[in-house]
Image (cartoon, rainbow, N blue to C red; front, side, top):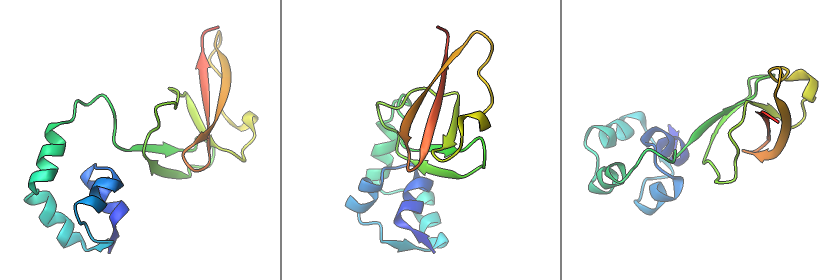
Amino acid sequence: MLTRRDAALRLDIPLEMATRHGLPSRMTEHELEAIEQDPPAWLIQSRANRTGKKKVWVHLECVVCGFAEDARPKKWWPDWTYLSCDYHSPEQVPEPTAGFARHEVDGIGSRFVAMVDERP
């Protein structure tokens, strides 16, 4: 069984859209495959409206321990070099490239810190 969130990830649509269009809270693989094979008009329209500039979902993964999650990206998220869980020490993350300065941004996904390396 798949959750509505899992189905939204696979269909590459926001969770809110999945709810609004009546996707059930639990689905079988077969039910999801049926939607993918014969998409409803709202899904076809959603895909046609995409410009490709903004991702619906992003995959977040800790460079230290490998913990991963998929999340809806926020406008304020920076372009990061590395992500780590908020409880890891900064020393556990690879050093910035020579000539780059690093700053950290908290609050990425449920528990990540973004390491942003930039030229000073």
